[in-house]
Length: 464
Image (cartoon, rainbow, N blue to C red):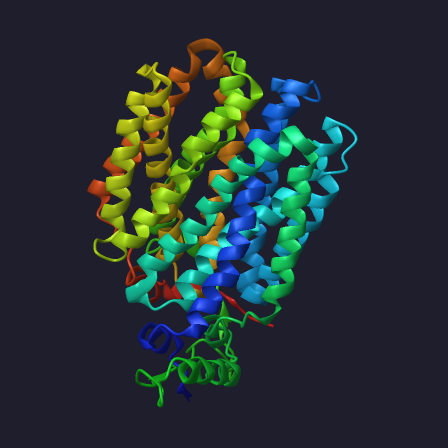
């Protein structure tokens, strides 16, 4: 059997058009509110600590409950999107965390808030997997680096605006108003995203060739392409199949097969480092400042100035685009993160603390953008979201205990001990990326597709 679809080559060769910009806005706005909702814990927890609604120990449980939900969401999104489609999973997770955000604003006590936040975390964890994966599937390979930076910019804007709004909204209306803003904004984006199309790559992988072809022709027409780009390819039937032309459902065990295991391990290591570094910086800075004697207003002001780095970092990624391989981008940003993290604990002047903190956050944000963005490129379409979801799940499972680890380090060694651990993690992953020689670039997933072990496919079951 043959098909004229060839979705990967055609999507990689169409020029950027209004279609890509529309996808970028719809995906980016979801990332914005996910980052907003995810990051508001920093200012919200500091405010609840100051007002007596919570304690440091309950704050730690709140963060851990969030991480439990994020881990479940990352795993759930990977399976759901590979099995039933990108659009269905994309809309489900956004509706879940938007509705739960509104419920969080009504929580009568900290235990209730922790329970609701755990459920909300499922939607938030799924959004990260979906957003990065959809950029990989929709955007041309030669432009991916720039669009990953743009996606990071949406997320960085969410982080920074959370801090700025928290500085104004929390003193005026209390921390509950922050959850209302997150919930209403998320549900508005959910309504706008109803028009987002399914991924042609996934449609082709599932054997829905006519739908994939119709959608590709629509994209090509909107992009000004008068004829299909790329040559048709023959779809070779599975020699183990008994008369069925349906594609095979590749089981989860493919991630641990000899030809894929290196990619899986690298994706896991990247996600663990990206997430631990990012959440340690954004989630705990205001609380540290308050514990050291700052007023809540001054703490939030320091935090807002530093969190502006979450916009500067992705902007740098956008400017760099595809000028260097993502492997070396990750090495560079990891090195700079470790340098600024090593300097930060020794500063005493407020201006220097803010300046170095800004640069530290910018490098952490750049590392996060390129690291999470590279993860889906390690895996082919058939199990891309399960691969990315698995890596994020492991990273987020590690975060469940991280609040208690961070709190213990802070109590015994101060902020210097916390930063030293973060610095060491960036050094380790930078050295690993430099010497392992496993590139994460636009051709990486194509190689993974070709290297996919045939024995895994021969044991698979037909997709319904």
